[in-house]
Amino acid sequence: MIEQRAAEHAERELHARSDFHRVWLALLLVGAFAAILVLGVIGLPRESAALPAVARHAMEIALPRWGQTEVVSAIIYGARGFDTFGETFLLLAAVVSVVTLSRAREPRHEYVGEASAGQAEQEQLGHKSSEDESSEDEQEHEAREAEEDEEDDDSSDGPADPDRIGLGARAPERARAMSVVVRVGARAAAVVLAVCGIYLATWGYTPGGGFPAGAAVSGVVLLLYAALGHRAVRAAVRPGVLEPIELVGATVIIVVGVLGLVLTGSLFANFLPLAQPQTILAGGVQQIYSFAELIEVATGLTIAIFSLLGMRREWSGDDEDDASEDDTGDAS
Amino acid sequence: MIVVNYVGAVVLFCVGLFGVLARRNLIKIIMGLSVMEAATYLLLVSLAYHGGSTAPVLTQPPHGMTRAQVVHGNVADPVLQNFCLTAIVIGVAVTAVFLTVAVRVGQHYRSMDADDVKALHG
Image (cartoon, rainbow over all chains, first blue to last red; front, side, top):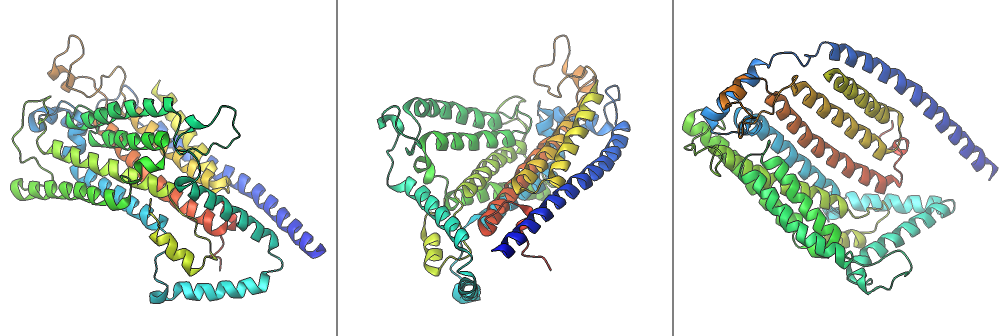
């Protein structure tokens, strides 16, 4: 007992000391870095500097070459089309990473032998330290119970909405949705916001077109989730539904780029006739690119957010049954 | 006084960097990274601004100006605004991946303390 306490004390002291070192070392490094940044900032162009030639060129070609009155969009889907392509696939890679990291364990224990080996190790560890880990087991027990409660919340107990619970009832509120005021407000706002989001991309007046529009559309899904509960959006936000849609967006971007290369000789060049500026078809291929980007960003963000929200616990000591249960459960 | 914006971006960046270096909580480290990203957005948008410039939009020229005057006149730099958009998207992607890793670390080690993540210690 005394030994244990001494060990705890030593560890606490070590932590305190490392905290102290961490702070002064960090201050030193940040100070040095700040000095470098200040030196860099001194050399930056000021307000009175002339517009760089590349920006002036972009201003000049936006209307004649792209038929776009929104110069930022004309650059992002035109002159910098290839950069945007890379950026989009970086977002896609991030979404794939999030989905891979957040999904439950795969039933591969017999194939790789990883889980069975891990289980043997766990059992060994369990025998060795079953006596002195009582506090941690309690902690684990508590956490497991809390998580089971959380999972049940979605399926069984708790009313559908809090309107049936009397005022002054005990917290926490277990209803799956929010009150009638919030639900009606969210339903009304969601329609307006969704239309606004798509309008931002289709008319091409917004800087960035599909990017802000996609963020707005995924915001609508989040709004509905917050107001109506997970059950209302569960069917729509599964990666199984959204991932193919996202890949369709990615395919459209690749097709537009390659068609530009084949038909005009350069990637993402315009091969469509230019319509009257400020109409829905203005900008040639940029409109298609922007709309594909809308799909890509909206689905990508939604998948990433809901994968993160729906992450299941993965205790190191899980048994096989638990793992397979995780797999068959709804991957939300 | 665009210099104020530059200084603000430097300060913001340093605050974020300090958070990343001095904190041990993984969520705070990720917050520090987000603050650093925000500093780059501020710097890029400030760099795009020129004294008295108009927005790089040709939809409706400001009063008494024609489109040609806007094109050749004093406008904010659209290319740098573009970089800012790119930076935002990449920032979102990176933060999403970091958060997922943080949740997994939290589940695996039952701790958000970066010091407890020692599985790869030699």
